Image 1 (cartoon, rainbow, N blue to C red):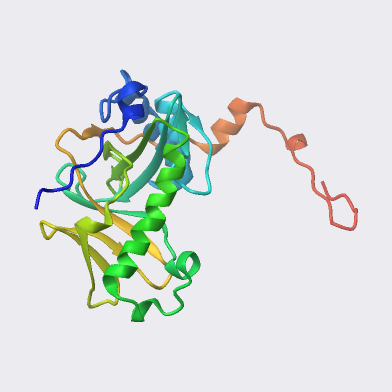
Image 2: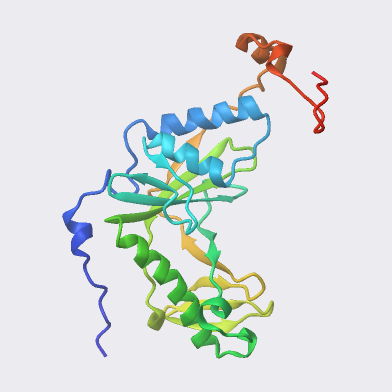
Length: 253
């Protein structure tokens, strides 16, 4: 049987994206490094997650940050939208596979399957992918280009890896599904690669992705944390900036 080919998308070919996939704009690495250094200097902790990473990426590409309910178009620039993901790794430079939490896909809600554990694994897996595909399709009707940008970060944030990939539809016919020992559903492709995990408790959908060879690696020198009192002095702070009162109306500051 001849393998079914993926269709070419006329809109993707006709309308150019802001920049080629995974070829970040000039100055991107420097901007991102400076943002990480500023974060470490002001926070003192090596915590960078979710919305903060989305905002930083938007700054680095001169895009717009607008958190969305779907979570696939949190950053926009022209005819392109991004979902921003971040994961930890002990060594971002050598990591090959990562797990990307990609939303909650609930067949119970979308298809009325009350006892998913009793549902045929392949039927359930097809439903899980159908929910994902519906979300992607709804956004591809709006944007000519849809991408995911991934930040792989070391515990200290002194080494990070960044790359992009196209946010695509998944053909359910190309995957076989089975329950693992932990009672989670796993999607396996025709080459026996583990591609997805779906957890019945919470409906969490995870995509297992391969880090490309052309991913960007950035190393930074960790700064000292800025002194809080010096910052307040530089701002010209005085106690008149703060007022406080009891809820019943009594002023205490």
